[in-house]
Image (cartoon, rainbow, N blue to C red; front, side):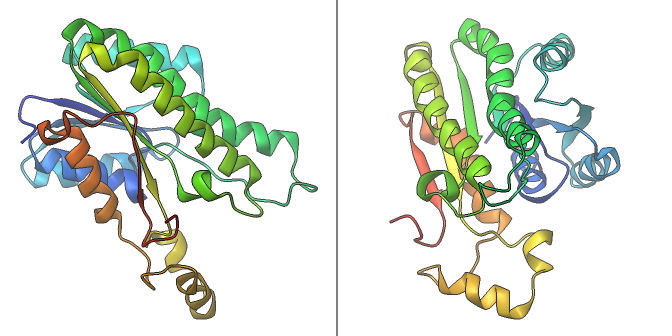
Amino acid sequence: MLTGKVALVTGAGRGIGRTIARTLAKNGATVIVNYNGSKESAEAVVAEIVQDGGSAEAMQCNVADFASSETFAKAVLEKYKKVDILVNNAGVTRDNLIMRMSEADYDAVLDTNLKGAFNMIRHLARGMVKQRSGKIINITSVSGVLGNAGQSNYAASKAGLIGLTKSVARELAGRGINVNAVAPGFIDTDMTRSMTEDAKKALNSMIPMGKMGSTEDIADLVLFLAGDHSDYITGQVICVDGGMAM
């Protein structure tokens, strides 16, 4: 499905990013597994992909840094000559109530979640324009659609990512580039697995379908948006949330 395509997934060392990287590789893409601090995790993802017969490489970059992102993008293009699929998945949380939130925690979340996506699009869009094709998929959140108490920084970053998605989609639509966003709800990851059973029950009660989603639910949609079957879809925000944001 994606044979001959080069995909770059940011924050791909764990969780949703890990499953996205593995899914794209399983369907034929050569995957750059980006990480910032989790080198061992990223290399483990690459090992899993290679073991499954795929092609991947782990590459470090703090996407929140504009200059580092530019150097990273140039290194990828120098080696692979192109990037066909960009998945902006890197994200952090620094939850707190607004009256207790520090400026540093607010800035850190906006820098990675929102500016990080801008940085990667900024440095890779030109190549996509030249080849007149490309798929940009931004991983936002249901928190960016609905808001969430205690997550004003995270929700703002993810809502900003939706605005970025729609604006860039309008700019690049005429060049054969699709730009869409995926908004996960509560997903079964290491973080949610560590919650108490009572907390999980309370969480599930907020979801119309009564259960959390899987990282595969997100990755399967990303795969669709990365492939040819989504060529006439752009500027959309698709929620994968069990019905939370109806």
